[in-house]
Length: 282
Image 1 (cartoon, rainbow, N blue to C red):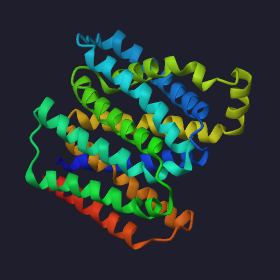
Image 2 (cartoon, one colour):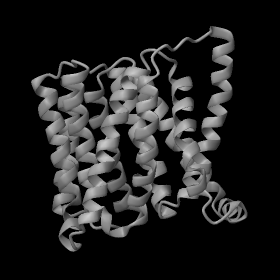
Image 3 (cartoon, rainbow, N blue to C red):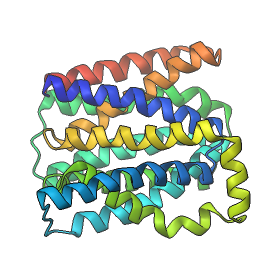
Image 4 (cartoon, helix red, strand yellow):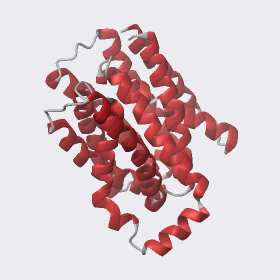
């Protein structure tokens, strides 16, 4: 894996962990996420118009855009549900593991991406590390079939939009592609984001203005980096490397939330890190 691309995706893992921390802090409030996400993508759309006017961008294949829009819409809903439910943290590794494995499989069969033996073992090692980090929570919580079902669906949405986006950014500038996909994905969710009325939404935004900005710019900026990386590297490699954000989030938990660094978490962190090294070598 190219060193520059690898470094970019690792940086995206840091920013991903950062904005996810604030999303969890507001219990996955959909109104905050929606307004923050929409605002930053409208800013990107202004640049998209500039690109169309100055460079005359032509995009003849809208199939990946439509697929990504649908997958992102459902992903936004399921992801925020994950953050709004404490008990679903036990199912979180299912979400990330499904996304990683699903992307690798579809990339191999649909995109004909070559995956070396080293990288394949690294991808598997990352998934094992994700599971180990969450084993403590898994033992301390009751099994919730609904949570696991939504976790699997969220993982499915992840690898569907990852494959679509890998194809899409080969034909359109990542900024233009991301702004169009996100605006189209967020538009049908307007009523859901303002289910208690616009006046109530404004109150929430005033109270959590900082979180809204961080979540909006953080989520959009993070995925923009990923899309630029996808122009040069295999999706099957990028998605598992991005999961280093789980390691970062765990370390943040140790430092800021005084969480206990259990044996499972330590082994999981080592496992994910080892997996990244193997992917980099691949």
